[in-house]
Length: 117
Image (cartoon, rainbow, N blue to C red; front, side, top):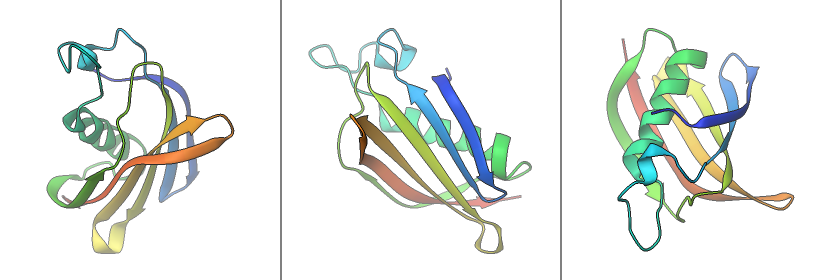
């Protein structure tokens, strides 16, 4: 299940930004968790792979996670920007999810993924 996109920008051949509104009825929030729903890490990684294949590295697929940090939860109603940076020569993708708080953005998760053909 893909998120509700607000805007998608390919800034350069190796850099993209996707603004996402996390709707309260999003499939991924169901049952994760009852008291305070939050977006699971597996959903965040699924969206990263969806957008990198669509926008920056068609023909590449997941190889391995080099590192990932989940620093703050992504909650229903949040507006976030997914930032993707692709380094084809290293076959490495860097990503971060930044939550909008007024005019500021705060990193909620980030990581590096190795891709292969």
